[in-house]
Image (cartoon, rainbow over the protein chains, first blue to last red):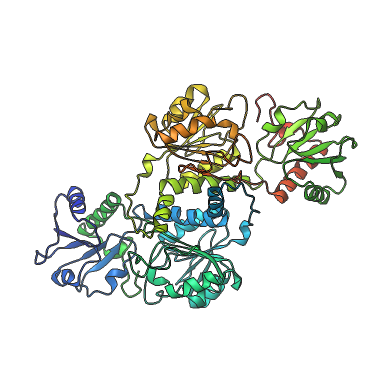
Length: 313
Length: 313
């Protein structure tokens, strides 16, 4: 069995090659170079089309992230299946990131810290938790974990997904018909959707201005993909007060350009795509376990994280 | 039955009087004025000695906070028992406050935000969660709730209390003999202790420098009372790097004096005693339920939150 590793964006392939060799001693594991022998399985991040064109016998295309949008525009070999990471330490990081942003906004800790820098011992009237329902778009592994974490802090939690879901503690909406009601019933919006043709640009003036029953004071947390947000729509909504703020970890173009207005807008918190990093050791172990199962005869349909290429996630 | 309300520190008594009248229509409820008729029960925050000297027949002394240290130095009428709030919406706020401070430090979101203000898209190597065990001092209602919230984010959790405890998911230590081992096994220290003669000044050079096995990098979160900390010991520990930072909500003297060095120290986050506010409606309902039970013949020992005056909490 031959496994190839093809990573871009500053991800060094060597530690992945070494980790996979240790986990799968019977396999030949190498970093991809153009023209190398075709592999049975590949571990990739945003590979070039040329890489895929060479892989005549590729079965599993293992993406080292949860979002596979970078693969969906490519031509795949005929029998290749895409497999995404199903958790690998990312959901706890996502729960941390979202809870930190939510609590910081709800409790106004950013305001307290700014006042403390001026040496001011201030009093702010506590806000009512029931007035801060949190709506999660995307109810997969990450969305459900984030929902559980938020519920623990006693915020009302709503969820929205393409198909109907029933999840304890989350009031669930679904599909295009449920979207307006979901948005109106949410004050803080958390985007954890996969990026597909159906979700590109879903965060725009028309949708974001429905938050909080259409009243001012909504808040956006985007930890999915920059292309979910129509960036030009955000600043007018913040400047008019319709939205009270936004925490953004992802951007249409990354790294965010030096002069981009998001950097210094007082109501926007920018982080550099840091909400949930792929953890190599856990990811290697997870991918190796799936390859072992496939080589032992398991069908792709039995593995967690196999992507429905038509649906896009 | 007569109930009196005696509050200091900017707490207006009127809403408490109205709330208690609505809950207990058979009672005479009034704000205390010197020389008023003695009451059967009192609802208080830091009352003067004169108030207690007049209460010859007082049974229940209901404190509108979780910490009763302000009452313990006073002479009480002979049959009076102190009752503290047992939760009343405070534990979820405490869990929020501590998780926000912990995540902010662990994930270095303060550093990311500072870099973002300079327009810098940075990469920071993720820290290992297992290297950030969190130690909670005080394992009452608040400490246990905070421990559960932290465990959900998969940090190792340790706890320390006066007497032995067994709590799922928390490695428990107790008493003076267990203190050194508890401190060494904790990197982030959360103080939720009651303030008593045994705990005053417990956060000092000698104890804080044992955190993290004595290695640099410990972090302090104090949400109990300012007098738990020997304030003069903190800044040298931060300046030498032995401690990496501190989040402080309580201070020996409040409001924190305008020129106090804590305000502008780069490794200290100051909040104005805002970690958990008493929520009046929930507190009134809780106190009224306890008064009803007592008037129906219940013994103080059966009520949650009755203080052992000798122990101090």
